[in-house]
Image (tube, rainbow, N blue to C red):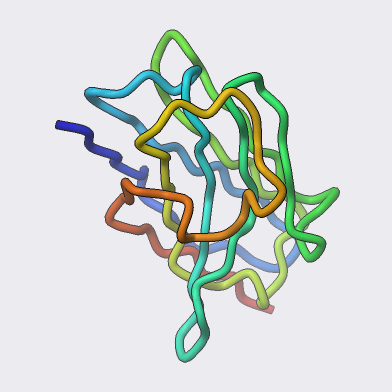
Length: 128
């Protein structure tokens, strides 16, 4: 059974940094595509960053240059390093993973419909 468990998020001031992790079980991260999504109150869930089996990455424009997605294949863990945070980054963050093999990212890699497994979500709050 595949499980995704995000680390605890946190609260930071604007300009600060946070690193999220997503520990998987029953899963091999290097063979699949994984992503981070977020959902702010009253907003739709949006894709933030994705990584393919080959290590290729994709970012939403709004976080490009500030966020970095990475993974530890040996630990089967996904990470999201978030720098230069601003209040608009406040949201619940979710990690997600594909069921099927995914050697590299597809065009719509940040589409939630592509992902079959989801973590429980972790809260990130950025104050001004």
